Length: 70
Image (cartoon, rainbow, N blue to C red; front, side):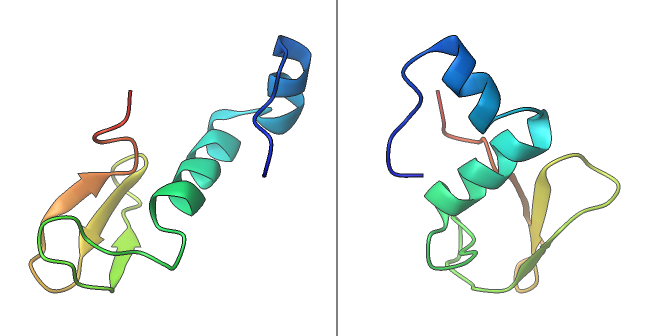
């Protein structure tokens, strides 16, 4: 997405649900793939038990995709 929506209607088309918003945040936060903020490791997975939470393979810490955002 190069242009951010300019109206509520455009926003609703771009982000019809919470999953679409999270996928956008993932692309913006980690454009070259996941990098854990604390240790910089490149491997992690999204937890099925906690919504929109990723866990680092290396240090086993967790982060939310929206952590540090407005």
